[in-house]
Image 1 (cartoon, rainbow, N blue to C red):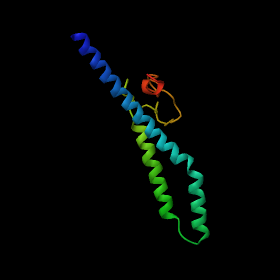
Image 2: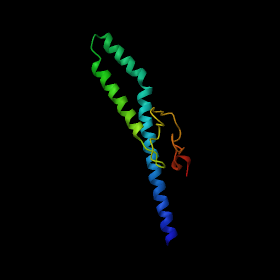
Image 3: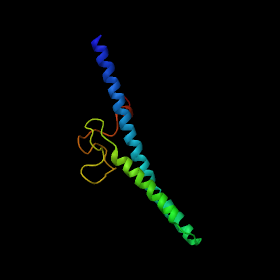
Image 4: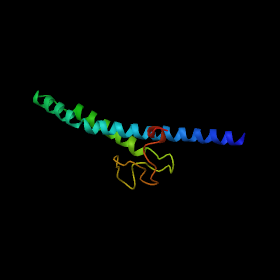
Length: 114
């Protein structure tokens, strides 16, 4: 009976860990989408400027979106060591494939086919 209980607890803990890793990946993907759409943003700003209009609103909206996604990624914590996943000391590195502190892989077991 205790072995079943222990096995169930381990499965629940693994599910929680995988959910947290999935949240971290989603936050990073949002930041990357914002980063990779930067050329679209530049074209939009150029067209608005060519039309003789101000770009303050577009620029502020894009900067706020990018900053929000950056703060979201920087605040994500590793499910194993509970440190910031992508931040080692002061700088955010969203290209990491593992925790900056303990080496926990970003891809959980659910993405490895288990």
